[in-house]
Length: 88
Image (cartoon, rainbow, N blue to C red; front, side):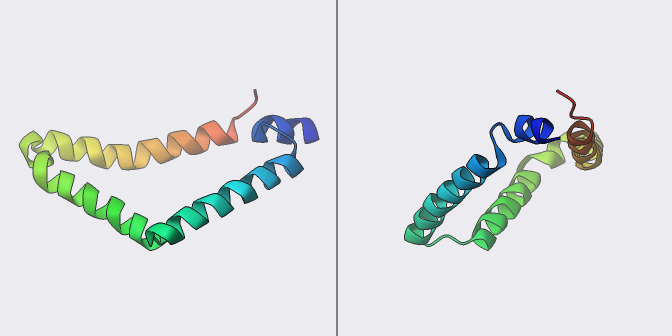
C-alpha cells in the first residue's frame, strides 16, 4: 500500500508534506506581498473566460458552444477516470 502512495505522490508522504508546506509558505508570502487573494485569482479566471467568450466564441456559432459545453463535462470526467484508474 505504501508503495502505491509513494509512487502516486512521487516521494514519501512525509517528504511530500514538507515540500508542500515550504511551497505553500513561499506562495503565501509572494501573494501577500502582491496583495493577491485566492478569490482574486478565481475572479480573474472567470472574467478572462467571459471576456474570451464575448470576444470570440460568437464567431464560431453553435459549433463553439457545443464544443465548450461538451468539454465542460468530458474533461473533468476524463481526469477523474485517469486518477481512479491510476495503476502505474
